[in-house]
Amino acid sequence: MDLSNLRPAEGSTHKGIRIGRGEGSGKGGTSTRGHKGAKSRSGYSRKIGFEGGQMPLQRRVPKFGFKNINRVEYRSINLDAIQALVDNKIVTDTVDREVLVANGLADKKDLIKILGRGELKAKLTIKANKFSETAKSAIEALGGVAETL
Image (cartoon, rainbow, N blue to C red):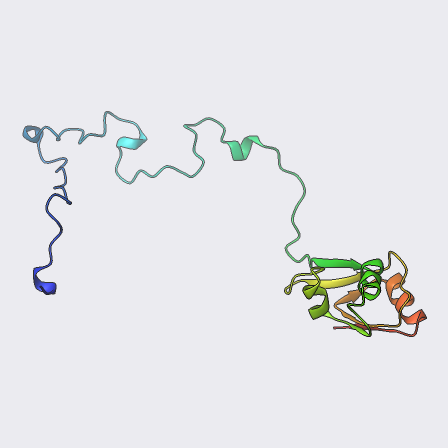
């Protein structure tokens, strides 16, 4: 067997119906499209969401607001979550993306922002994309470093 004598299995293909080849064929005239209307015309393609002239759903539903395409989404982590890592002896001196991802506080593609809820009791070096003012002052008050990436 080679490429020159390949053929489909017996009975797996069907001969197409020849449409629009005269009245004698039984498939002439309207060529199985019925009479008149958009669907009978050549070049017809229904618009997405077209409901036969009825007001389509995407126009019936009210629209409001907008999505800012330039919005930057941050994963927020509070100081009490970082203090919990210190209490559980997971962190001793440095908190960075790898530590937060390993402990399920962030995903590896997230931008991280540290927020100031809770109380931090340990002197730490924290590396993140952004810090709130309260978080930064709380970290630096203990002699720690808030390092912006």
